[in-house]
Length: 231
Image 1 (cartoon, rainbow, N blue to C red):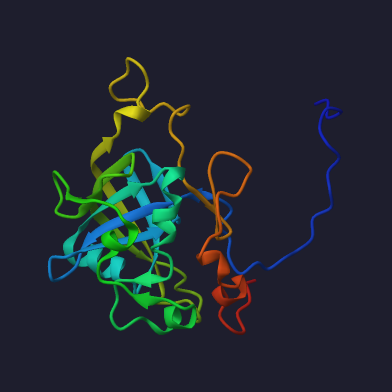
Image 2: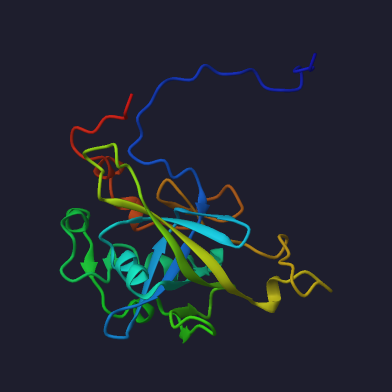
């Protein structure tokens, strides 16, 4: 029998219905090509990796989703915590024109030059035409593999969310985050990803990094009126 004397006493948990479930994941700046050849750059944090595959949770009507489906490619730029200001300058901006109604409601505006707005340097990928953000310590070129419609059983969310699976084609990393003497290994003691947790920015420390523009949107605005979790 396991000795639990070293563990803190268990607290009773209550049932809650938070509007969002962003418990803390790395921020990704997705670089894509617009239909006129210009570049789009969109911050998001609904991403996870298995091997050289990545799943991206996106709004079905976003400019990034449109660009990825049309071109079949993207670059996943991973900002470090010291790029928090650049990322926050992209908050509440969209490449879509007109701005989708849901984003209008949350105070978004159209921005054509996302890289200029963020103050980041764009460079075409080696294998894909989508843009890398050179200041990001990690830049991952990828091609679209599958698009999965999400929440098809939920009448309120159906058609609004997609999970896009991409396959990685090339990984770029700054020398400053590489493990000593290991050409293909990133050193976790040197890599400091930017983390978003419940709309706020964090690094690998318990202190909040700075005020978040997205954090000014009330969480309740992410829950459609009348929505309840499925039984």
